[in-house]
Every structure is written in structure tokens, then in C-alpha cells.
Length: 342
Length: 188
Image 1: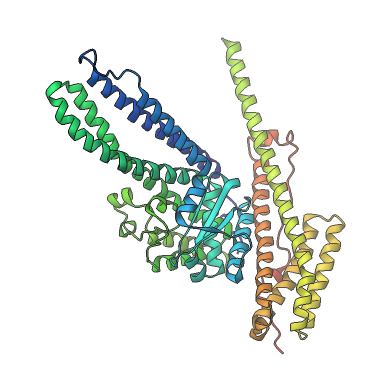
Image 2: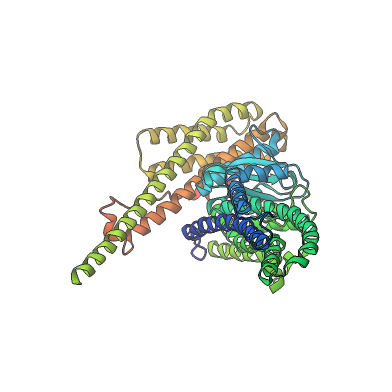
């Protein structure tokens, strides 16, 4: 189907500003991550400094902010790790296997389709992976178009036809081309670390804090220390919630954008619409894909009901826009171009 | 004061000129790359055809014309391209070949017993993907070429177009209705 006057596919989605936005947001994400660790470290140091001040001269004085130095270095180290091997961590966590020499017709067709869509989108062919899971789903990960990977589940390959597979792969190519993958992969890696760390440390701090609090109350009641301690503990508590909210708000609108890019690459929005409907009807959760990587997928792997609502609350907590609206938009696009070509 | 203003204005102008120039050159390179991609895929198709014909020949000794048309169109396309033809001439020759291949594909589709024999299914996928790759390479080329052509005519980029050596490029248009038409299958 050729470009029609009403749907001008040759005018790309504003790619440059989208790429620039993703680059900027990725940089902010890394900076924010390291700053958060610095705050946890140096904030803790300051609290320790204040609370060890004014005791007996032979008592321990917390003067060197070793906690801050260590935690900032740890944060920077983890950010570097996320940047360098975030994609392979994501792939590893889903248990995907890379396809080098395709076995059988299904895999061959999948490899061919990825090659075709790489040509259509004008990027180098990404790594091709399969997740052995019966629920249909797909995701892309990577740092930039030269270091990117596409993965689909076995269930997707078996449940949709060739043109629908093209549309789904094109959607993922859209994420790769406009650098969504960089931001989303970093987010997956960093969210994972923060959630894990805060889980562990919160427990430790909570327990030792109870004991220490019980002891220190007798000695000093400097209100500054107490306020700082509360803020410090709350930032531990809220960190995982905040990063999750960031992940959610970043991933929703870009699904619409990737849908539009898929239509631009395949010139066939109706194929993506029917693929999405098929994915939606197989509403079983994708077991191989964990919560931390949910925002990377084409459809919510957890099958949460909240994604189907367009209310304020849903708009804050859903990773994906409602499937019905996505399908409706694609169909509108498809019928417009059908009408124009007659 | 006046000189400073003038210098600032000049700096802005130079800055903008460089940006516009670079943008045009980047687009020009994209057009060239897209054309190379088409070239690669066309060569791939030309190399694939002898293999394809040999495989199908044994399985279908009927439908000779369809096969011969493919071979003929392929040889013609190679002849046209090796003489360094324009985009238009290449497009015409390749469109003929595309039409012939689509008819072959339709024939394979129409005979279920054909699909059952040996590696026809595999071959069918091979043919489909080659055709798709050419179509998508062409689509990409047309998209970036159209952008390039528009950009160099637009104000204010038009002022640096001559400087960047930008000239309109030919699009790969479908000149033959054969490609749009539904292939006719002769049964019997």
C-alpha cells in the first residue's frame, strides 16, 4: 500500500527531537541515580556526624564521610554497569536465547522479518532473540541502534501471521530507532538495583534503627538529627515507589509513538491492530518477564487490569496505554489510507 | 555597540548556515545509503533466481511460461543495471521481474501439492522475504529522497543548497501497473 494523501507516511514522526529527548532523559536518569546514592551516603554521614558530636572525647567521632564516598562510588559503578551491560542483563533475566542459525520455518521467518524491518527502518539489524514462553509478547532493549536486541516470545511466533509479526517487529524497531531502548533499558537496570537495595537496606536500617533509637533517646534529643533521620529514612522508603512511577510515566506515551512508527515502516497499521488484539486476547501473564522489565514490552506482561482505564489514577500507575485506544487509533489510520487509495 | 551587534548577527548567520549545510549533507548520505541498500537487495534477488528456478523446475514441469518469464526478466534486469542505467530504467526492469516473481509465487500458492514437495515452503519464504526486502528498501529510499528533495527547496535551506551540491534525486516510482494488479493464475 502506498502513501495516501491523508496519511503521509514519508513524513516521519519527529525523530530528532524524540532522540534528543531520550538522550537527555537518560543522562538525567543516570545523574539522578548517582545523586540519590550520594544523598543516602552523605546524608547518613551528616546524621552520624551530628549524633557523635559533643560526646566524651574518647568516644567515636564520625568525621570522615566514608559512607558518602563509598555509596557514591557504588552508585557510579552501578550506573556504568547498567550502561554497559543493561541490555544483556535484561535479556538474561527473561531467559531469552539468541538465534544465530534459525532452525525450522518459524524461526527462519522470524529472522527474515527482522531483517526486512531493519531495512524498512534503515537501522543495522539488531540481535534476534526468542523467549520460550507460551504467552505472546515482545520487547526491544539496547543502548543505541548499533547495539540493540529484539526479543519475542515463542507464543507470539505461533499465534500471529507474517504481516502481524512484521508490524510487531516494526513497533520494536521504532523503540530502537528513537532511542526509547536506551532510556528504558537504563531504567530497568537502575530500578532493579534500587528496589533490591532499598529492600535489603530498609530492613537493616529499620532493625538497627529501633535499637539505636531506643538507646540514643536518653542521650540527646537534637531535633535536627531527628528530622534528618526521618527524611533520610523516608527517602529510602520512597525511592522504589518513585523510580517505578518514573518508569510508568515514561513508558506509556511512547507506546503510541512506536505504534505510529510501526505503521510508517510497514504501511500497514491494520496488521498491528490485529496483532495487538491477538496479544490482548491471550491475556495470560508472560511468566518469564518480571515486574522490573514490564515497561519494555509491547503489551503489559503482567496482565494488569489498570492498563485498561484512562482515569487519572490509571494514567499514573499503568505501564501501557489501554489496548482498546491503541487499536482504535491504528484502525483509524488504516481505514483513512484504505479510503484514500479506494 | 553597532559592531558588536553586527558581529553577533554574523555569528548567528554562520552558525545557522553550517547547521543547514550539515543537515543537507546528512540527508544526502542517507539517500545514498538507501540506494546502496536497494542495490544489495536487487543483487541478492538476481543471485537467488537460478537456484530458485532449479528447485521449482523439477516440481512443476507445467507452468513453463511463468518460469521462463522470471528468467527472462532477471536477465534483462541484469543487462539494464550493468549498463549503468538511471533510477527510472532500473525501476522499470525490476518491476517486470517483481511482477514475474509474484506470478510464480501465486502459482506455488495455488498448488497445494507443490507445497508438499521438498523445500518449496522454505523457498516460498525465501522469495517472500526477498521481495519484501526490496519493497522496504525502495520505500526507505523514496522516503529519504522525498525528504531530501523537499528540504533543498525549502526556505531557508534553499540558500545553502547550491553550496552543498544538492540536486533533486529521482524517486523509484512504480511505472508499471502490473505490480499493483492481482496476479492471474492459470490453472490447468
